[in-house]
Length: 135
Image (tube, rainbow, N blue to C red):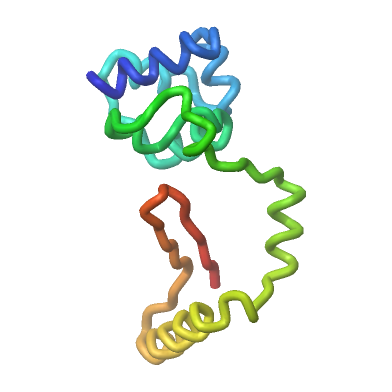
């Protein structure tokens, strides 16, 4: 129920109805209704879409009630536009992360010797950010 209260606080803060909120994050209205009634728990996809669309919402506050809403400027993360993401992904400066890339490449090579193939590696950091490496 605490999650429901935090979700309602977000709707109030942004002055959104459940239907308008569903439209904002491109999610099914019935899913939002089930979340608000407490019938269902939020999926990772829901949480990620909400955090991407509303940068004032902190992940720790949303999920655990820890932190502030709206987030303070010192805790606020910068959102990156899709064009910026594409530019970052195409650059891929290996020299900045060469040690990290070497470790990942070695682990990938070791795992490729088995029958299973790695599709994606996600590294979560304590500040709530993460990196995704896809094969």
